[in-house]
Amino acid sequence: MPSWRLAVAAAVVALVPLLNGVLPIIIETLKPYEGYVPGWVFLALNGALGAVTVLIALVTRILAIPGVNVWLRRYAPWLAPENKY
Image: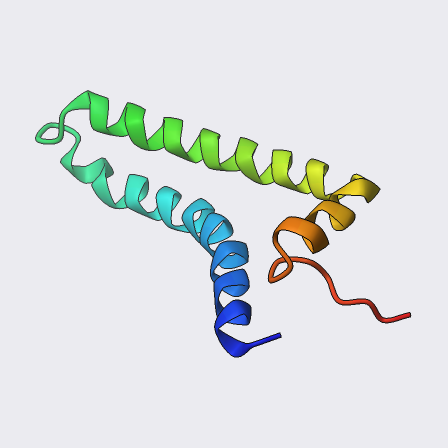
């Protein structure tokens, strides 16, 4: 597998959990400024945190289906696991 494909796969795998770690930090950082920051900002950040968590659960559940590896090898080989057997 070429290195650029590994980089794309690593970015896809790392981006979502990174968001799940960064969003709570942003929320906690903005809490002292609750009087100055509109309420919808906190609602949007908490909604994004919930959406990212659901996305992680959904992707994990989908990747557990055996047929997904076959589909990945056919349509997205740079994201497919390697054959070790």
